[in-house]
Amino acid sequence: MSGRIKDIIMNVLEEASAVGALSTPPCSFPSVIIETPKKEGFGDFSTNLAMLLAPLEGRPVREVARLLGDKITGASLDVLRCEVAGPGFINIFLKESYWHGVLAEIVRKGGAYGDTDIGKGKKVQIEFVSANPTGPLHIGHARNASVGDTLANVMKAAGFEVTKEYYINDAGLQVYTLGESVRLRWLEMHCGKKVEFPTDYYKGEYVKELADEISRTYDSEILDRIPAGQAQAVPLFQEFACEAMLKMIKKDLQDFGVEFDVWYSEKEKLRDSGLVTGTMEKLRDKGFLYEKEGAIWFRTTDFGDDKDRVLMKADGELTYFASDCAYHLDKVKRGFSTVINIWGADHHGYETRVRAVFKAFGCDEGVLKIVFIQLVALTRGGVAMAMGKREGEFVTLREVLDEVGKDAMRFFFLMRKSDAHLDFDLELAKKQAPENPVYYVQYCHARIMSIMGFAEEKGARLSGEPGLEVLKELKLKEELDIIKHLGTFEEVVEKSAVHLEPYRLTFYLRELAGLFHPYYNRNRVVSENAALTLARLFLCKAAATVIRKGLGLLGVSAPVKM
RNA sequence: GCGCCUGUAGCUCAGUUGGAUAGAGCAUCGGCCUCCGAAGCCGAGGGUCAGAGGUUCGAAUCCUCUCAGGCGCGCCA
Image (tube, rainbow, N blue to C red; front, side, top):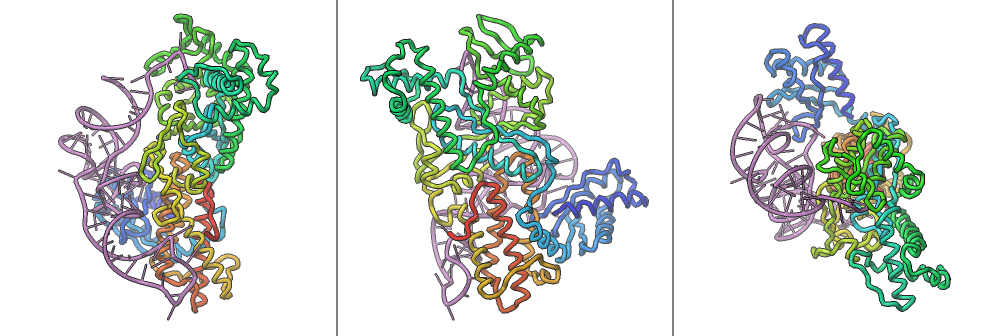
């Protein structure tokens, strides 16, 4: 909404330069920054333009500010007046009619309000969650999923073409270990054998469940005929377990409101297809590989890494990193202009390594963006809860989902910057009480819907789009404040997308609800005054629309009743 | 030891990317339902922005150093 004002100012600058009122040529103008001041009395918008321009002009700041202020006032009927304040800010005061126009536009756009085209249809890939299919998703994955999915929604709204992708790490040691873990449990539980269970194997209860399941699925004779040698026994267990885990993960995510466009199998797409070995050959041709102690190394130190990395181990197995080289190269080949990885913060040491791949192939490193997600500290009524997959004691996404629900979870996970620690208290998230912020916003929506229902009973019905004659009834400061806040929604969506910071949405929505609730408490929407009632109903409608849209981007429901 | 992240009210965090007198929520205390949803509202107290320098019209924000906490530093993923 500040865009129109910005245009006006840029025109003013160019014109002033053309007629000689400014000596600075248009090519060296500072970029025009419009702010919405946080203080009352500083106008609707303000700009620091004069402070940046004055040194170039070689004139006093206030003189330049006054000159520009006068011209801005004259340039648009929407501008009431401009004031020069403080060290040289130009504070711009707009007429009420400007804001009525903003409200009308929001109502007209409806559910499409908030959508912009700054992404210009650029292809973006967001890879997130990508948990190994070696166990159920835990609470950390839930945060990752919330951030990734909301970021995808926000970027779509901002006009990017987004592909959501889950990388399935279904080759290598971890899934092998899972298969072995299940096999050992099976031997123990269904063959009555005494087994030594290695400490670094998966110990969770779900491993035993898998052992049960496999014994039900397969004829015991088939399993019995498996020779004692592990190498042959494992594939059946491994595939079975991996598939079962993946199925569970997909179901968890679906119930959490997250759908992926692509499930990318490491085994199928990278290993079996020969993409990994092909990529290694290319690296070899470029001279970045060498052999040492029976392993094949990638000289990532050429690209800022602090040590070289193994691609093929001495035992002939490929490393996870080998796959990742091929995977990231493939992402670039698929034509994405931006590739976003959402990683747990414990992976940050991995970043330079992956960037080395881009550099080695001469790819623009700027296409890779990594969002780090800090750990979630889970508490119940303030008491810490244990985490950690290997220990077999972890809180799963499913448990929390069943207990507190999708809405509270998704909202809570976006109440903090991704790279900040997050305290998540189960008792609080569950509470249907004022200290639970998700209800504060949802309640606002339900309340507005209720008001509109009441209005309809009284015979006040909204139809079509509001004209300025109708909206001119909205004169209260509180009403204009709500419109102004509604007017920044597009900008919030854009900034969330561009800065990869979807958490901005939760703050925005809390602020919006924080403006509406007090307004409601002090003023009647539905009253004897028909004209005023109509105008206020339009205001309500716009607020509800934006809340619904915002919650929708977060993957949180906007209930009509609660 | 090296690298990344963090340090703002009692607690949990914002702070429009360098702007004007640093803001919310929770917690605490005191008020508000004959009237559209009290899951709400109104009011009060609370600060050496970890510390020290520097950059400039101007710093919570940028640079350097120190202190404190978290994470990472595998032929694991």
